[in-house]
Length: 305
Image (cartoon, rainbow, N blue to C red):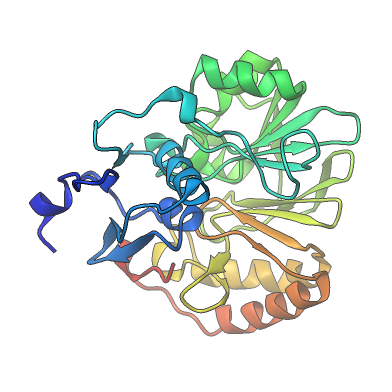
């Protein structure tokens, strides 16, 4: 596809400019409007009603390069929908909120707010740093902990933790990415990090990768595994495994049978809600498939979103 042409707005409005890095978040939020074409996102058609317009706006405010633009070229802050409820109708009744505003310093990773029974919040990974965003989250509830899934998503952790007077968590395997963390997870033992929230170290994607499971319902998997629309299943990003695919296979073999969850909420790749029994079956199958994988060169273009 011609990037010069792709960067130009259509006569009717929205467009995707040439800065797109193919992170997939826009396609997660507006899958009927934005598709992958020649290794980047492309708007296939303009929104036809208010609901579709909202989906494009959500994609625009999540995009870490701000590549999704209206015809004017400027996003209007009054359109900003974040944080968005993941499992409820709005921010007042949702347990999990999607932060949006993905950061270039975390490779465009998704981040979440997790509401606890006390009304307090935990932040899992972080959006881009913004005082405006921090104040917005604080109006929802007190953020007590910032849970980092691994080194790639650590960039804004300390700043958000300090802003909220919250504890910053990371695993020792990735401690050099957040050496001033307040809580350090060690070895491969599962640890309770909050009321109903367990940290499961899962070395593989990086040496210090961790997934967090809350209430036996919500699994924040970082970059360890994700839902692939291409395969219709849970997948590991085998072509972007920085540490060891064999270690990831061993981690899954050690951990998968102990996991119970209904919501898969990754850092990269799509989210998915399924019955816990089906998620468990799919995790067993993923564990078996991963055991057959062998090391390969890093190749971002090979990910099956």
